[in-house]
Image 1 (cartoon, rainbow, N blue to C red):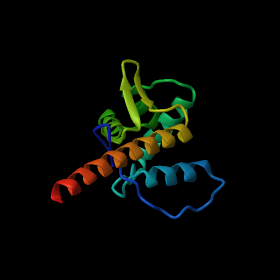
Image 2 (cartoon, helix red, strand yellow):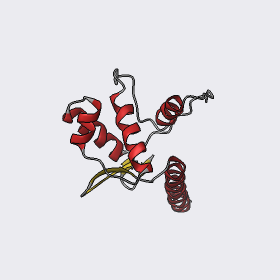
Image 3 (cartoon, one colour):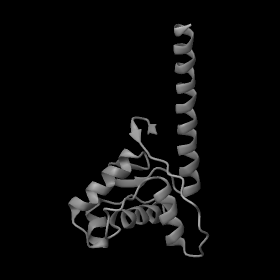
Length: 134
C-alpha cells in the first residue's frame, strides 16, 4: 500500500493474545510489515518502541539520542528511521523524529483512512478504464 508516496505492507498474522505489551507491539509492527527476519537484534523494533513511548509524551527524539539510548550505531538507527518514515508511520521534523500520531489507535485509524482513500481512487480509475474499454 502506498500512502502519500509511502509504502506500507499489511500482513495478516494470527493474533495471539498476550498480557505482555512488548509482544503486542511486536505483533502490531509485524502486521504493518515494519520488522523483518534480517533484524536479528530487533533494532528496528527497539527504535519503534522508543518512538511510541516518546509520542505518548508528544516529544521528538533525535537519531543520536535513539542510538545512544539503544546502544546502536547512528547509521543503524537512521536506516530504521528511514524505513519507518517510508511507511508513513514516522515523521521527521526540525525537533527530531516523532510517530505520526501520539497513540497507536489514532495511528492505525490514520493508516486505515489513507488506505480507504487509496482504494477509492483505485476504484475510480478502474471504472474509467472499464468505460474506455467498452
